[in-house]
Image (cartoon, rainbow, N blue to C red; front, top):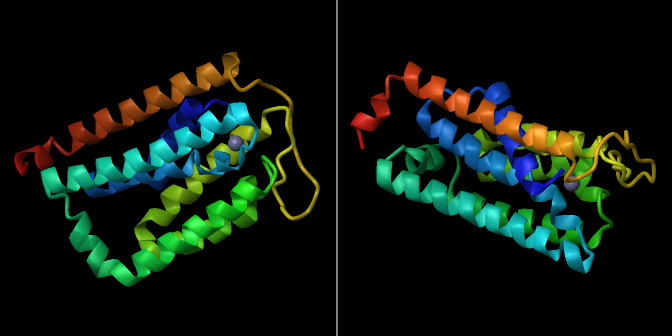
Length: 208
Ligand SMILES: [Zn+2]
């Protein structure tokens, strides 16, 4: 699967399964799912795959900047919610730990630690320290990445550090299935957002 496909599937899954309740949660859900659906591929190490790592970093920065911008522009209440549920010390400690785990994951072989259930557990626990509301969206999107990669030909070491891995060898990264899933995920996301905005009657727009 390409990065685009992972983002499309992960975002759609996080919205449909996570069911954010208001526009603030929708923004947090999409931001978190964008990162959760690509963070696993920080472990690619060959020179041609360096572009993929750059993409993961770019998507992460973009998600953070877009969320901060929307909060600033539309006063979604993310800052107040964050201060109620966390604090700056937890944010700094958590981000340091998150970065540490990613650096460790990057030093491991592709589709091992960063594509395993222990990594989902550890990163989710760290996110819980940072801001608990993000956790379900992160778990869903990271699991969607791992599940999608299992359809590929390279073994996914789901239970790292065990050497055992699983792959169904059904599709290639840029093959037809990947493109179809990318289109389906994007359509579902836009459909969900359309219905969400229609149901909330665009109320939040009045407050902008
Ligand atoms: Zn992957």
